Each structure stands twice: as structure tokens, then as C-alpha cells.
Length: 443
Image (cartoon, rainbow, N blue to C red; front, top):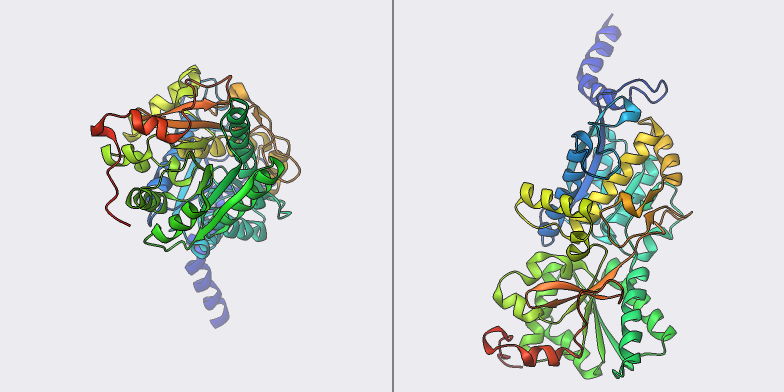
């Protein structure tokens, strides 16, 4: 009798946990109608990269709103009728978690969302190191992880079965950058060396390795290769090392806080490389150019991007989505929010095609999912189609330059809206005195 009472007490204690995922798992064997499908969204919504994390989270939220709503005027998958038709109109419910930009926290949140919140798949994570840790935990739990906003090439080289990336890797982005460099060389611009300054973590280290590899392939000398710690508060000593190398092109791999520190170091030292090329990260955050002072400091800088507002404006569906995003969240859509939007859309299509919330069936559907460029807001992507490593082979990037207070596409040539200005000094010297970066305060 005492044993029976103890068993009943245990059952009552754990009843909430048993009921929590029941709705989403009801069809795993029977494929019956479910009310909602839970998907976990991991982003850094606190800490130094909180602005980028919130932006990405909002992109994911808009994708879920479109799937759960009725938007027949959008030429997007699952936009015509509410919910997931393959699961009887089930709602796509996003469960948010803050990674704080920390790999251990990201892995722990992935565990909590799967085992405690009943999510059947995960997306997001932003920083490559956090994505690596969280996706490895997802692999252990045998739950699909669809990443849209991390670019480290090694993420798809780990042999994971449940990891998929919709966005380009830094290898794709780097090739686009070096295509621009070759274009400039053909136009008579002298470029014989490159410099690299990067945050010392997985994103920065992997991106620096790719840049060195591509530089060698293009016959360019690496004149400076400088890493700095993630907790650095002053980048002047590192910029001095770069300046000593005198590179013709400087590649930057940074997040928002350190990208702004880099700006301050350039200004303080009065250093202006002929060209500055940012691998996204901080360069993709609107905070990088917010306000007259930051905008002046960024004048002429170049960045790679997987989504361009200019290109989106040429596509009716992408333009409508961007307008809807701005109206709802009071801020323009960016590369971060567009990539998160696309990752959630892709995952939702796979869940719908699987007609199941069984993670294994969703993983199998992701292996074969195909979205054409016409079904995406990501201009100029060709498609979403994953290779054997989980990398989308249809992802593309363009190069934008910050000129006259806005980012404009300058490469490739068939998509550009203006000619690139090179070197930077030609653009800075043409600025009115009121828009020029502040004079250096000292060395």
C-alpha cells in the first residue's frame, strides 16, 4: 500500500512534465492532427551581442507569424493558409531561450528546450562557438538543428547527422570578397597583400584560416594576421600591429562590441587602410553605423551579406516581408533577421513535408527539402538544398559598401547599384568637413 501511494505521488509530481510535450508528440506514430508544433529558438538576447540576437529572434517570430496566419499575397511556402497543412493546420509555436553568447549556456538551453519544453527541433544561436556547442547537444538528443546565422565553415565539417545550415559559410563569403579584389586588380588597382584582424574564437579563427587560404590561392601575401581576445577593451595595440604590416586590403572578423572598438582604434591612430572588408558580424548590426559619428567612421567600409535591402526592394515578396518586419518591430529588416526568418521557414517546410513531429522524420525531410529562389526572400540565393554535410548549396553572398549613410551593393557587377569606391581615402577626402571622421586624439 505504501509503495502504491509513493508511486502515485511520483506520478502527480511529474504529471506537468509528462503533459507538456504531449500535444506536439501526439502524432509521432499515428500522424494524427496536432494543435501545435514547438520549435526552440536560441539567440543571445543579453550580453554584448544582444542587439543582433534580438534582431534574429524577431526574424524567426515573423516567419512563425506568417506560417500561422494567412498571407495569400506572399509567394512563400506555407503563407496561404494558417498553420501547417501536413499536420492538419497545426500552429508553429516558437519557444525562445537566451544563450547569453556563451557556449555552455547555449548547450544547456538546448537541453532544457528539448527535454523540458518539448521542442522537436532547434534553430538560431548566432555565434559560431555557441552554435557548435548547442548543435552537438542536439546531436546527442537526436533533434534537428537548422542554423541560419553562423558562418564558421567547420560547423558543417563535423559529421553531424542532425545539423543543417541554410546560410553561406565564410568560405562562400570569402570567395565573393576575393572576386571583388580580382575585379579591382583587373581595373588597375594595386593589390598584392592582405591583412587580417579577428576576434580569437571559433568564428574569428576559422574565418582567418579561410582568408589565408584564399589569399594564397590568389597569389596575395598575408602582411598581417592579428587575433585579439574576446574580452579586449582596447584594440589600439592590435591595430598598431596591422598598420606595421601595411596591407593593401584589411579583412575584419568581429562582433558588434569589438567592431566598434576597432573603429575607435582606427580613429585614435589615424590609420586608414586602402580597403576594409568586414565578414558580417558587427558590420551587419545597425548599431555599427547608428548616429552621425559611427556613420562617419564607417564611411567606405565594405561588408559581405547574405541579404541586401536593396536587392529585396526589387522583389515584391521580399519587399513586402521587409515592410511587414519594419511595421511590427519598429526597425528595418537586416541580414540577421532575414537569415533567421529563412531558417525557420525551411524548418517549417520540412516539418510539414514530414507530416510528423518525430525528429527523425523531420531530419529525413530536411535531407530532401528543396526551396527555389522564387520561394525565398534571400536575394540573390539560388535555392535551399542541403548537401551531405548539411550545408545549403544554394546560398550566396554579395558585397556592400557604406556610402552616403547607406549600404549599397557593389559586387558582383550584375547586381550592383553603384561602383565601388577604392581606395577608402578617395571617398573620405571627398566628404564635407562636417561628415569626416574625427581627427585622431593621439597615439
